[in-house]
Amino acid sequence: MKIRQTPFAGPRRLLALAQLSNSVGDGAYYVTSALYFTHVVGLTPAHVGLGLTVAWAIGSVAGVPLGRLADRHGPRGTSVLLALTTSAAVASFLFVRAFLPFVLAACLYATAQSGLAAARQSLLAGLVPQSERTGLLARLQATLNAGLAVGAALGGVALHAGTTRAYLTVFAMDAASFLACALLLWRLPRVEPVPTGKDGRLMVLRDRPYVVVALLNTVLLLRMPLLSLGLPLWITERTTAPAWLVSALFVLNTAAVMLFQVRTARGVTGLGTAVRAVRRSGAVMFVTCAVFAVSAYGSSPWVAVTALLAGSVLLVVAEMLHSAGSWQLGFGLAPADRIGEYQGLFGTGVTVARTLGPLLLTALLVDWGTPGWAVLGGLILAASYAMGPAARRSARQRDAEDGAARSAGDVDGALVAGDHGVHDGEAEAGAARTA
Image (cartoon, rainbow, N blue to C red; front, top):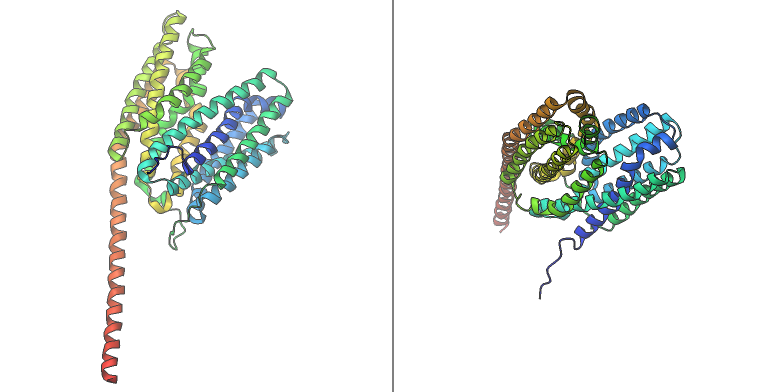
């Protein structure tokens, strides 16, 4: 009797455990890093912001060549190496006490993180059939959120203690989490490098339709800094809602993704459903921005809290729809022999959103107020509707390139067969003359 595998059996289970291990460390890092760098390392907030901006700018550029490295030399080994590098970068934060060493360590951390994301996507593509990738990515996203929640709770303990030892323990735990991630990735089956011919150039940068898709996805990712920066500033500066609501909204978002991301992604199975999911996410985000804007009107805290809770529910719906659609597009529009390279470009949207998003959201929401919400919602809505034509154009180009490659293969095969026929005829003629 054939036994049905569970969704996380075999390599899928190891991928989920690797995701869980490093997300726990990341969750603790996210909630403690700002205070660690200022209180323990001794940097000013301006220096911390400048150093991290430089680091993530470099990391966003490094993602594409490191993804290409995974394609050419094997994604498992590359993923393991980058996970170990990330662990070493986090461990180095334990010893830096000046600005320049901090910037160097942060650059190493951001570069390794960006490359690791691309290499792991290439590894997943080599281990999981295309039809199952979006579903697995949804499960991994739920696992990621669970790990972040656990890590954030552990980081909260360190924040409550407020001691140097507590902060150092958190960073040591983060370094250990990436070490565990590397060990788990090493246990995965080896994925052979994909033959890419003699052309070693980065083709994704000249694939204009795919670049347009990646740029539009970056605009849609402007929702990411909302929860961590935009809403906290909006709540404290523009509404009468209590400050503790920031934490409650974060918990709401995390729990909803854990519970419903897999179900939301279930209906995304191809280009058409992915485009529809992205378009719906843009429409929901437009309404979300309008609801958040309402929270600033009136003097009643209850009105503000109600509007913020409603907007947060809509925000997580938009997030899950966009995630499911973008996963399908990012993989489905990339050539099979350059998954890591293309995911390296697609993943830079996250880095750009985290780097430039805070500046944009601060200007739009805190400085401009309600009109800023309208601009943000309109921008995301326009990008979501532009994604359909851009994705279809990219798909047509990919189909044309695949067809040309198949035709070239057929011609080469015919020429080889013809050469064999000539040689065979010559051999038969020679044999006849001998006879």
